[in-house]
Every structure is written in structure tokens, then in C-alpha cells.
Amino acid sequence: MKYHYGFTLVELMTTLVVATTLISIAVPNLSSLYEAQRANSSIRVIQQTLQFGRNAAISYGVRVTVCPVKDNQCDSNWGNGLTVFTDSGDRNQLDGNDAILLQTSPFNSKDIVSYNRSAVRFQPDGLASGTNGTLRYCPNSATSSNSKAVIVNQAGRVRFSNQKTIYCSN
Image 1 (tube, rainbow, N blue to C red):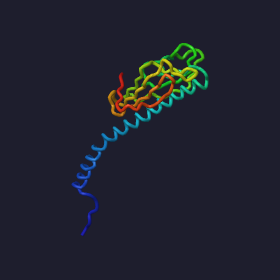
Image 2 (cartoon, rainbow, N blue to C red):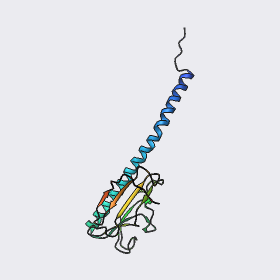
Image 3 (tube, helix red, strand yellow):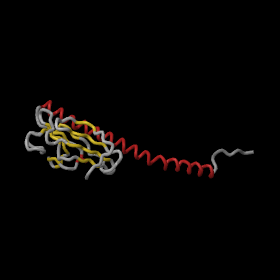
Image 4 (cartoon, rainbow, N blue to C red):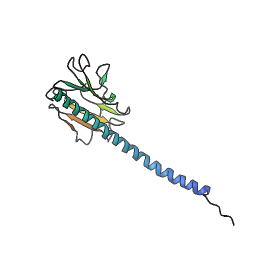
């Protein structure tokens, strides 16, 4: 008598149906996990970049600006990434003796990054007078449950927001 080793077509089809069902249940949860990780990572980059800007202003004794830059001046599209530069000439413009200290990569194109001002400026003493506010990061939509925010106060202190619900505006 001959023995046949392997699987029958019915066994293979049953395995495929079970695997497909399990994958279809897991994929939405993984995308939410990815979105949450992306938000956590990006808000930390934002927070560290702002802290670097403040520290540079104090260390170098000059005004330092943090903003998204387009055509050598601050832009309103915060999703393009952040640039930290010394700002000794015209405000919010790279000119003259200004030096770029740090640039971040653009954020995910599906995400919304918003701030209530065009730039964050740190004075030589570390104060952020006149440019304080809340920088919000919302992955995929303005009402994402994984949204995060960083708050810059008048004294230049940068901290994470503890609000449970954060909404971004375009």
C-alpha cells in the first residue's frame, strides 16, 4: 500500500480561510498601533527640536528661531519639518550671518502639524516671549485619537500637553 504525504485541497483551503480571517482582524489594530507610534515619535522630535533651539539661544547668546523654512523664510506649513537657525537679521528669515543649526525631516504627508504662530523665537536668555503657544501633531486626521501636543510657554519652557483630546486645524 502506498502512502501519500501532503495536504488535500480541502485542508489547504480551510487553512487559507482561517489565516485570512485572522489577518483581517489584526490589520486594523496594527494600523492604529503604527499611527500611535508615529505620533509619539514625531511629537518627541518636535519637543527635542524646540528644546535644542532654546538651549542654542542661551548657549550662543543670540536669538534663535524654530520654524518650517521655505525660500529662506518661515512658512506656515509645519508638516515640512522644522529648521533651527540663528536669527540675527530680519525676524523669521535666513539672511546675512544667520546659520542653520538643525533641520528635521518632513513629517508624514498624511499628518497635520499646526501651530498658532509662524515661528517659535527664543531670546538669548531663553524666553519665548510673543511666540508661546501649542504645537499640535495629528496623525491621519484633525480629530485623531492619537493626536499629541507640545506647549511652549512665555518663559521658553517646552512640555508635553496632558490633554486627552487634541484637535488640529489646517
